[in-house]
Length: 169
Length: 356
Image 1 (spheres, helix red, strand yellow):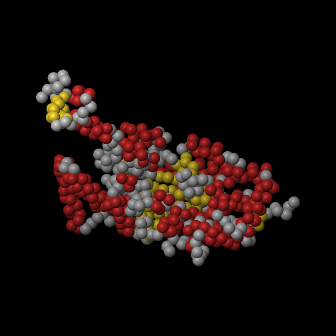
Image 2 (tube, one colour):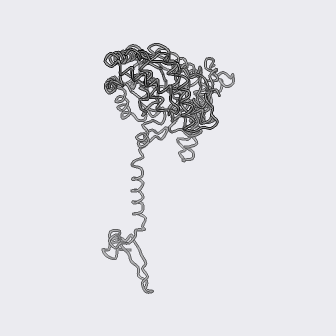
Image 3 (cartoon, one colour):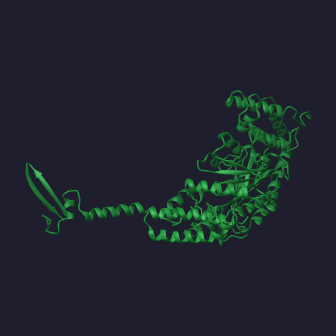
């Protein structure tokens, strides 16, 4: 079908019934808009949708893939989401830290005492299980497989420790 | 009730206690791989609180601490903790799973799921920064045997707010500066504090007024210097400087205003000896002025120890425990508060009144 006005390929087709008389109208996008018709064709909808998605996504800049912290979350609370954020946020965080810390750019002093491996693994396992569940429900199977591998290697590490009941205490 | 014990910060004794009421040291820690509390799910927050509680129970040196589940204790007990300065208003009234371990009447405590997963705090009366740091560090290290703390090779101990990163250390001294306030030197203090990267807050923390001329002075820098170095700044420079500043202001004020000072002290004592209704805020203000009279050597029979403890005892929840009334209400509280103050000041006198 061609546009009734200009002869370009028509993308809007309307059947108008006036006083029992049926008339078919075929218009290209430009002339449909000009005629004030609604635009039901696939292409403009996809375009509109894409526009919407872009609009919605624009403020949602995910800063940390581990916890899903977004730029607006961080701006709102001035709090980070997880320990990984310190690496995920990179240079912008570096500048912010140095700004609030009187120019200091690295830690100086104590480091942690060794925590029980068992407790560390237990917490890591719980976190990985949750990530795995999220990945499966989001149908991100590749990511899920990676997470499953990490969980399995963690379980192997734990094996002998569990068998003897030792947990570093 | 477990919380009916004297509170350490109101002991009123210790080095430089004419100016420094108490010293507090806090170390913030988080668990590796665990979402910070602001973004944690209910399950994650529950797991974290349980992990901290388990670590306390497993540790030889910590297992004597009492565990309080903040979601299980009454609102009145939570209010008591706030009045003692052991937890903030926000932590007290939050909805997420959280708890705290407490020992020696709050000399040391461990908060689970405050802004960070773990916050160890140690409080001492008077100016005792090094001792408080040592106490907090002992607890932190004992916990660290059982909990894997998030640590970054460059940034040190990781915290939910980047302003605490590195050492996670906050040293805070509660100072009584009535003469500096009276002689209009507070803006000067604030300017000096800003230059030294120190925060100045009111008696009850951020955003509160300088009730009873009490100020909390704390470090804003937590990165780039070790916890001991940051603490040394306080015990070697900041606290001695503040103490000397306030003492000089007291001497100068008394020298220039002997009779107004005596008059002021006498009126305050008379008011506290004869009041029949007393609101909390007014009581705090008057106790602050009496503290100035004591520091100027004008008031006899009232000690810093007594005044510090009264500042806690006149708070609504503490008053309710000490003086259980048949009916509770604002007026009843005021009556009981006035009665407590009258009794406490019955034998207090002001020197120099007859000298004219």
